[in-house]
Length: 236
Length: 241
Image: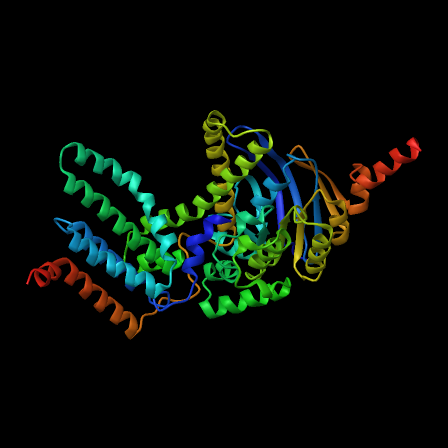
């Protein structure tokens, strides 16, 4: 199944994979906050953030090309807003919007590609993220695959009966919803039958050591430098 | 001997109005293996879902003396292990080992204990070699075994299997029968597969329109309801030849 690409990445081995999930979540959040709050994302900032992300990709030994392509999935969304800015005559803002959203997507992909999702969820739980949010993400993640698989099956069935046209696709979405719903109920039932009581317990306990501390301190220091120090150093 | 499962006057109506169970009485004793037979839509799966409280109808259901009610659900679900018809619905963790650990961890076992229970269960069903694989990369037969291991790891006293033979090729079914017949638990097997039922059960109950209409020796039930495909097609061939 091709949906498992990010899952496969996250089960790899590297210096970054081995780090505590909470630390990675915190560093990633720091990065997102820095990128989002940079007032004018000039080429200098973009290069700084981009290089930092590139370094993380290298350390995590993730496939750079595939990751960059996947991160582009956010562009249609931010592109809509960028277009509005562009039409309003503010082209630097339009570029900054695209660059910020793209950099953020890359950062999140690095996190998700170097940390199995159950670990991320457990880390969020430990970091006192609202339980409901964690649960919603957990089920979204599980059922996303259910729905995509169901859609693949229906597409094959339609193809084998002679076609997959736009109109049949539109009708199929309704059926897909009903079927996915039924299937999701089945999954939920199976989880309850094995004693599910509202949260996922992890096999490997969350444990941090000095290397995780180093990553947190180093990561945040680098991000802070990129956000507040880089421009000053550069213009000197 | 005190029954493992006792059901009295169980009735259940789905929200859409369908009466799925219409007064079911049933008793399962330790060491028994019972085949649940009956046409599609006769209430077999609905019945099974009441045994660990996934559905709740009117009437009495007790498991090992415990009434199946909300406060008892964790204990009941530990005693009754259900292996669902579609293994894909059951397997959802990234690796086989983690999936099999899921139940034991929910029971409150420590990660080490859960891992030990999972390794034991995987060995029981003969699939320890796949422990680090992703469940969706396994064959149908392997998935079925992992699903079974996920339930065995919780050390249930009663095993409920819903159509365990579906999607399996003949060698896969034979292997599954071997695994199941080696397990000491009492078993309830929902199946249309007469060969499968014969290989494991001596007693059978027959469901029809939400009731158990016959309860007795498997062979007697099979003959009474002409439920044996091979016997019937044999007569057809004879008369044709």
